[in-house]
Amino acid sequence: CGSSIPGAPTAVPSMAPSQTFMPTDSILYNAEEISIPRFRFQRWNDTTKEMQDFATELAYTEYYWERMSTNFIEEVAFGDLDSNKLIRKPWKNRVKSEKPNQVLAQMGFTEDVWDCWINHYGGYEWDDLIKYQIAPYYEVLGWNRDAWNSFVSSDYPESNLKGWASLTPEEQQAATDLCFLERTWNEVPYSAGWLESSDYLATTEPWILYGSTKPEKIISTKLGLLHWLIIIA
Image 1 (spheres, rainbow, N blue to C red):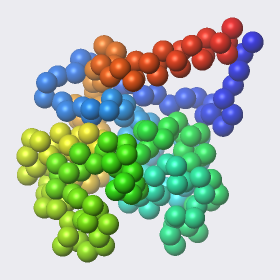
Image 2 (image 1 turned 90 degrees about the horizontal axis):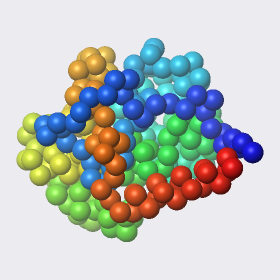
Image 3 (image 1 turned 180 degrees about the vertical axis):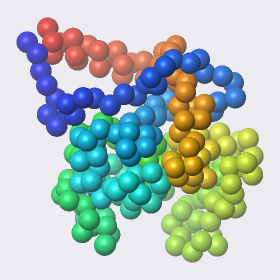
């Protein structure tokens, strides 16, 4: 018998490029092998009406969609978006859904993808960064517990004010492991035309082409396939 997933989008957004190009050594990829949500890296007018409706529920407009990190909802981790209690005013009044992460799931986001590619784990407590082994990436960028918990910008590391080109190779890789691209790190809006010229978006991620090199990912994939085989049997 068949089965449908409650709340799933009617057309699942693609995680793959429209054309397949091989990865190159000049492209940095995140160590966690979390694929970029390509449906989020589209111009507003290139998205579907369904996607725009979902996004509007979460206070996106064309302006906020095309400028990453400008919608406050992106500062909140996926798990904390099971309600809108952590969304501060005036954004709280703009977000129409009382369970924003359900809308994100309808858009095609998973917790891993949202927390890395959109939130960059900025909504985590430092203890959570340690627990999920994310802290080392931020430590390469100069962060520590005191700086993370501070509201004083002078306590933040130098990397926080650096453009991508000024980061060391090690810092660039750490930022990549937090799912930053050069243009998202530099907060370049989509209107600058970088989506069309992005080498990353033009290639297929190596773990998609060649399979995962992470044992836990391989196990998870096999279990997922087994689960779906049981469902459709």
